[in-house]
Image (cartoon, rainbow, N blue to C red):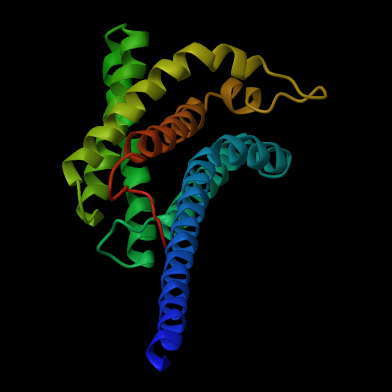
Length: 232
């Protein structure tokens, strides 16, 4: 009789343990999804930031410092925003956050130089459209090569995705540059100031980073170990 009375209690305790374990697994899965969604949003936002930084900084400082100095400040702010933002999000890396930040800042700077050299070399030959494609693709390749050693898994994939992203960015840039330069908000041309002053490098750099950010997220979202962080 005693054994019969104890059996239901034992089954009840076992059932409660299973229910508790299941609840923990569900909560864990939900938390991972939330982290992934948060990281994905943060990654895209970080790489879209230059499209906001360029008009804000150039318009804020050009009357005080002149457009050339304002463009330089915009470039520094652009690089800093992306480098710092990425360092806070990236988890598929074997380096510290500070290392990612400084190496990414250098990578963007080198990408800009590579892009300018390639563009000017091709443009001199009279191929304006090809100059944009060669310059931005070169910039993407350099950015990917400099960042790749910091990636834990998929170094070659990262280089490929980065280069492809900037190539697509060149297509987008050529398609929107006229509209972007002519855009007016409350009588203010956000991008026209830099464009008309000859600082196109700010615009194609911002566009390239934006598309690179989107393409890396889209291309890695289905991987078992995505490039963008799942946890801090």
